[in-house]
Image (cartoon, rainbow, N blue to C red; front, side, top):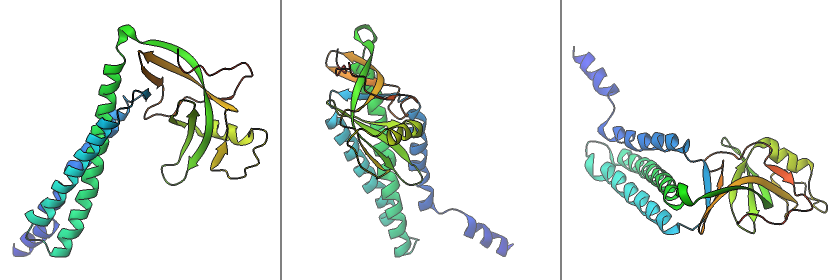
Length: 223
């Protein structure tokens, strides 16, 4: 009986480690909300809101690490330090990402009322494209003269690699110089001074978005 109680005690999760479930749950909610984030807002700039989300993440990191440092006296000092670091990191990331995701959805709802929002096709000049490596590999374009950083499909990136602009002698497969040789054929929405690109956000732009700019195209990002 004594051995059984001892085994249960050893296998039971500690109070401190269970706090990791909170930021993990917030991260799961953030991933769920990502399915509803289907546009990239270009203007207006909501940098002040993003700063507030960053501050909320920092506050969360302090509170979560404080749980380990001052609220779990039964753990050894090095264990509390490791747990505090883990809680600070996941606490910051989960709160910052979730709050900024919610803020984006709210901003899009407020800035683009149905009654005064117009939708139209447009070409955006692409300044450069790049590929990120690692487990979460991505393919990205940056537009001009209105700057945005958008995810594209691997197929569209491969198209750019095999059709580099004349004069581009680059051989780096992770970087492509476009300088308005390529365009992104997108759907945009505008309401007063608010502008956004549809079918983007937390999602890749649809396959076939990237094309070589037609000779007759003049920047048409704003109506």
